[in-house]
Image 1 (cartoon, rainbow over the protein chains, first blue to last red):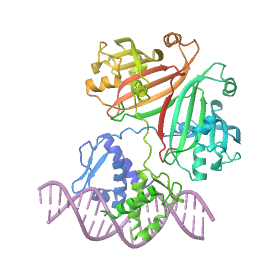
Image 2: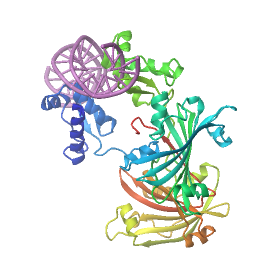
Image 3: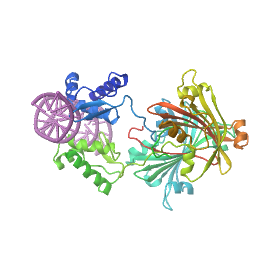
Image 4: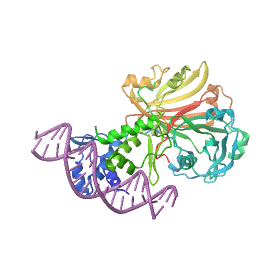
Length: 237
Length: 237
DNA sequence: AAGTGGTCTAGACCACAGA
DNA sequence: CTGTGGTCTAGACCACTTT
C-alpha cells in the first residue's frame, strides 16, 4: 500500500472519529512531513485526496481546516451486472447461450443509431448466482466494433469492450419495468409460467453521445433488486 | 498563471477541437515533459486535472487515452412522482386514501432510523394519469417533522416538506423490484389478480445521512417505466 | 526488454495571511 | 517578519503492460 494512502487513511479516520473536528486546523504539511518521516509531496498527495473527498480545505497562508467529517454522498455509477454483484460480494457466472452476427430488430437499430445495413453482435447469456439462474440477458453491440462471436463472453462485457477496443463507456440510460415472464424465458430462468419479472433495458454510450451497447435483461425479482442512489439538484422540480 | 494550468488549457482545447479524438492516446508524460520544457510533476498536475474532469484516463503500463471530448452528461437527479411526470408533460393527480399518525412497522422504523417511541405520518395515496390509476403509494415521514394529517397532500410531497419546514432533501436511495400484485392493491389499481407490478422503495435524506421520508410504491408497469441516467466512473469495476 | 504511469525524495521559490 | 499552502525542478525506483 502506497505511503500517501496510509497517511490518507489515518487522517480520514482521525477526522471521522472526531480527533479533528469540523473547523479544526490540521497540522501543517511541514509538521506532517517530519512526524511521519515522508517527503512533502507524499503528504500533499494525501491532502489532495482528502480535498477531493470534500473533507478539508487548504488555504494559502493560513493552513488546512476540516470542513466535513464524512464524505458527501456519491450518486450511483453505471455498472455491469458482473461488477454490480461483485461489489456486494456475490460472485456470478455467465453462460453463453448464443453469440452471432445478425441483422438487428428495428428497436435495436434505433437505440444504437445504426446505419441501414449495419449488423450487430447478438449475445444471449444466462447469468447465474451459485448455480441458480438469475437473469437472461440479450446484449447487442455493433458488429463494426470488431467483437466476434468467438470471444470469451463469460466475464464483464464492459471490460471486453474497453480493454480490447479502446472504447470507453461514459454513461448509460436504464429503463426498468415489470412484466409477466414469457414462456421461453420462464423455462430458462426456472420460473413458473405467469411469474413477474424485472425488465432492464439499457443503452450504454461512449464519448458524449454515441450508443455502443443495448441490453435487455429479464431478471428474477426474488433474488435481485435494482438499487440506485440519486442526488437531488436544486432545480429538480 | 501557473505553468500546469497553461498546459491544462492547451490540452483541453486540443481535445475539444478534435486534435486528440476520443480513443486517441495522448503523448506520454515524458514526451510532454521534454516538448513543453517543464518537469514531470507539472505535466502530471495538468493531467490530474483533466482526469478529474473526466476527459482522460491514464492506465499504468499503457498510456493516457482521451475518453471524452466534452464534460460528461449529467446523471439523473432525485425527483418525486409528480415532478417526474410533469417533466414529461403528463399531468398526474393524487387522491389521498388515508393520512394518519401511526406507530410505524419495524421496517419503516429501521429505514427512518426512528427512536423507539417515535411515530410517523402514514400517507396512502393513489396516483392517477388522466383518470386512470397508475400507482399506489405509501409514504412515511417522521411525525416530528410537524406535518399533520390535515395538510394538502395532492401536490408534490417534497415541496411540502422543503417549503414549509426548511428541510432540504439532498439525496435518495431507490430499490426497484417486481412482484405479483397483492389483492387489495389490485382492486385499487384496477388490475387483474396475479398481474405483475413494479415496486419502488425509496428512502430520502436531508443533510449527510438523516432519513426524512420512506416510500413504498406499487406501480402499474403498463404505463410507467423507471428511467435513470448513470455515469460510468473510472473505478466502476 | 522497453516503455508506461504511480509513487517518492530532497530540495527550491513564490504569494499570501497574520502577528 | 515568519509560516502557510501552491508551484516547480531533477532526479529515482516500482509494478505493470506490451513487444
